[in-house]
Length: 250
Image (cartoon, rainbow, N blue to C red; front, side, top):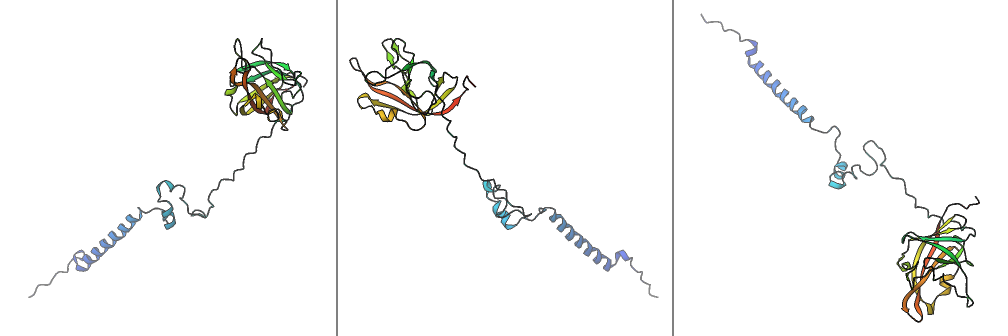
């Protein structure tokens, strides 16, 4: 009598083993895709962004393609710069006599004496007895007035260097300050320093009116001769750029 075969438990059947193997494979595949997805950036990088951002030092400047970013915002643009307005020249001052002259570059501070023309219509010089004085031509413009003001000083005397000994060392851009009797100060800026032979002195260029407040500082220069003195003059050309203080009457 043949024995009756037992039925295998369900968990040992061929169908169960195939089903379990299939489920494991599916689980591995799904898990692998999910794991790989965690390494990707949250926002996909477009081809344009990659090309703009891959140039090293220029990557920051070109991090957004022309025309805006991914959200449609317009790129930031700096407002156009306006050219600086030139500073208007100061208004000419009314008449008031000069009292002192100051050149900060030299640390020079000199009192002023009045000068006039001699019989030959030549400008006189300050007294030799006091080489630290400067002379202001009083029949011309006062400090800050429209026109060309003229100041004269000695380069040296028999006792040594005088008030304008270093005048030839001034350079364009240096300041010359002229104090007035009314308490105001006219500030001039040097434009040029030139030397002219006395035999060919350009009166019009030095003394001519240029339609604004200007200043000329004059001293001797060039070759010295015991009989005739210096052969040239050193001239500082300057124009008014600032006024300071208030008059005593205001």
